[in-house]
Image 1: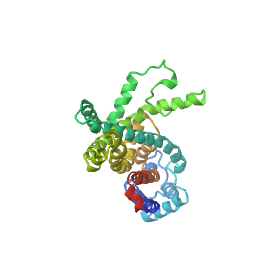
Image 2: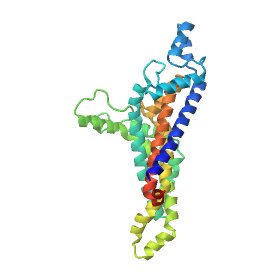
Image 3: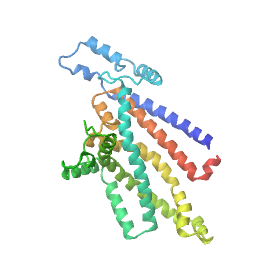
Image 4: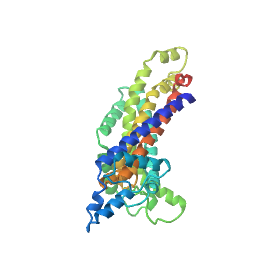
Length: 329
């Protein structure tokens, strides 16, 4: 199993390196950092513009291969360059990673767990009222864009906002925390959790709908399999057979879906962060494109690639735990 995981890890590293290279070249050829300086009033001298672009490794007159080589060399030594405001990219990235990972991790885990549970219930109670309602609810959520769902949650929270409630018991729809709240550490934790509810819910709802449909179909296939009928014929109770053998087999495809959905989740988090005023990686990515900030765009691409690497390894571990044949290789 260790050889299998090491082999998969090496494959993912190659994919991360490839995604990083392609992302940097795309950003460096598409964005125009020079416009950040030439559009100022009063306009700086041409010599100062060239000097500043050279200092930040953003000069489009320098061959792109040379710029990438310098960026990659600095990156290997832990230097991801500077933003066009001349702030270290890594310093800003450290803070924003924590913001995004709160949404991505909690949203993906809750969404996967609830979606799998709902899918199993729908399969066991096929064609029942519960199954029809969960199916209709899932299709409505899947057909609703992420930003529309986030806006509906925000507008609903704003409609029923009560300013007389204690600060830590409200459902906030703007920001990550209440500035200058003070009080005990527990009060500040509750305040952050209250700010976390609505953005997380916007991600969880879509994930639940996604996983429930796949899990329902996967579990229906398993329920009609020969090995499950054999287990029941040997005296195993239906519920025990479904949980011990059926669910384990039906979860195998979900491990692969988890890796892909976790990588795509950053796109949904981008809209969620902008709408709810969370200053995370998604918001930073949109702002960096608007600001023609190549170094920041490259840093966000690396972050996304590493997220997919981690999700892929988790999926491989789950796959190995669910399928004994993988551990033999």
